[in-house]
Image (cartoon, rainbow, N blue to C red):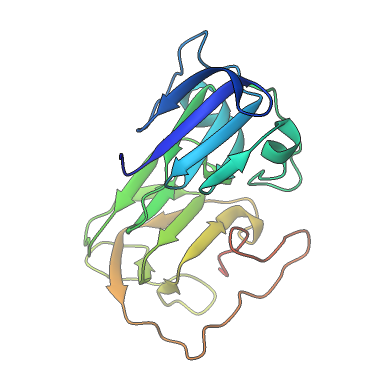
Length: 207
């Protein structure tokens, strides 16, 4: 069985024509993108209403989503409730990595880091997904520099972070990333901010 597998159906209840994907697709072909139910057999997926990982983004862990209502309930951004019943692009989330996105809501281009990297060069990071371990992020290469207000690196654990929620609508620069030991015991919850939901997928990056 493939490490990641998602099937979309053009009728509710996992009926109708089925199309299965096992890897990233930036432009799901016409005739294969109508979606009224979904089955994620393995892995964790992000699906998008537009090509090239744009539009409404929905995050789907392994499970069955029998109708558009169940699909919509997994919006990445709770303030965005639109869904056009089309999966025009999709990609799996790496489970052993830090994934950086250049747009909010885990849209746009991505950059995946799986080990210490002294030269990331991500100038406009808006969203971060961490799966596996704790990581320190630095604004400059070679693990140097710090972020305001404390002018230190940012250490983050497993979760999904929408940077712009607490960065005044601005992006951040990530120049290097290093894996570290968990600095907390017990594991702390990220504090809530106005208009956000704190949980397995709605963390925010405290800049």
